[in-house]
Amino acid sequence: MEKRLAPTIGVVVLTMGNRPVELRRALDSLLSQSDVTIDAVVVGNGWDPTDIPAGIKTHFYRRTWEFLPVGTQE
Image (cartoon, rainbow, N blue to C red; front, side, top):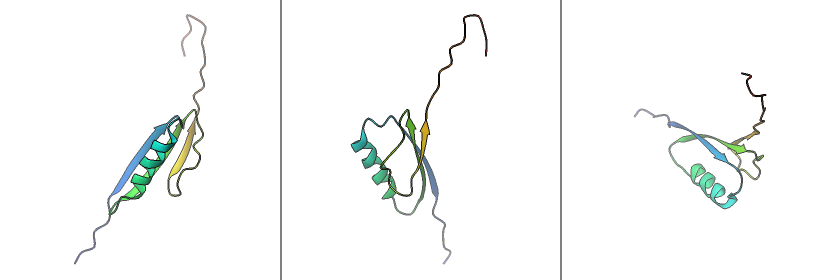
């Protein structure tokens, strides 16, 4: 019998951190999947993700705004 490799699923969760209960439920659901390998990252949009379960990567995204004078181009 040939052994099959589990498929890898990539997931990116973008959050502002203002719904922690729903975020935790979603992450727990991801981690409970069977017969797949999960590659997941939580991106905090203006929020540094905390209390994220082991096995899930995190990234803190902070957008910086640069205002250019009228008539100039980037």
